[in-house]
Length: 404
Image (tube, rainbow, N blue to C red; front, side, top):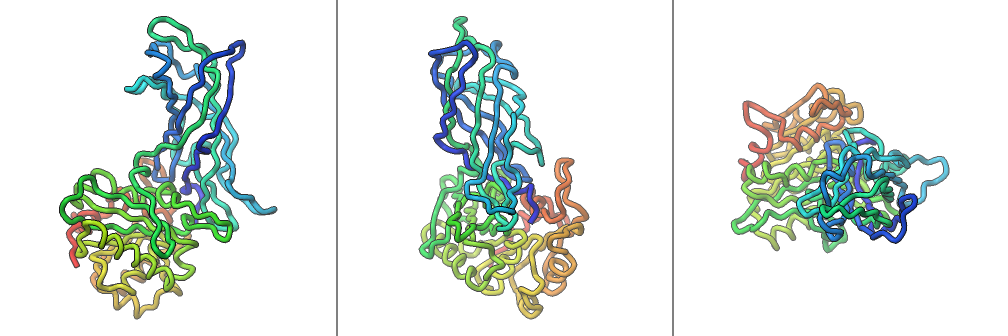
């Protein structure tokens, strides 16, 4: 799998970084959190929020981008073997683009960020393992000039204490572990009263666990891309009239042993359907790359469970037989891009479309969103943005109409 889409956090919660302004002493200590957003290419830290409301009302006019400097260091949470590589570690200054007050009176330092920009991501990719890991992040803040309260009092902060990473979209998914030990994250629609659909999101190869290192984080599935998050957005929730979204995490990668993983995923689905207000006629499965394969696999093993399937750039060659593909009865919409050089679409997605009865296909030329071109393998971006369309019907709307 490609590297730069990987991104996820470890905010070094509780890290304490001391920095004193030259000539200052005895100033207050202030904690801060890392604010993050999961972009199409992965999660990035986009701002820092300083808990300054207790210092008294701060004069907004006293704030400027140059008042604070920010340095970020990101390192692997597990040892890297000699000769191995981890991509996206960094040790650099993060440009502050603005200093402002939020509605609570806390100072927010907006940081420069963009798709593919080094120094904002929260994941590293270990080459030999083919896995993303949450980087240990240490942010250091330096105050370059005193700020002023509305009464004119000058304030120099002596110490800054780093807190947790805050990503509201990710934090909306609760943490769980199945009876068989498979970890998963779950989004539940607010105030669920009637029965609601369940969407199962199956991650790509880089978002599984890294064992036997003992690295099983239940985080990368939501931070490396917007695959699961897209279905929890207000737009998707309106289309599905409120939907549960579950993102299981493999203990390795789905392709390693689909026959073993299928019943573990099914266990999670059945347990959720038993414990929550889930409409068993409206259970959908979607996934990218490894997860694209696993989406198809689930419909071959459990033909009566899913009302629809969305396999994205999934692997088919040598893992699913033509007979298995021809036997799929679940309504299926496949998505890929012609320039995918990781899982070539001709022998995989297009081949599956040719064999799966009545299946739909969205085959893009390239993967471009908001003017940024991504690797051709990342066609899941289109599904996360509800872009695929056939006959004027978009993929989320089509999925929401399917019933078992």
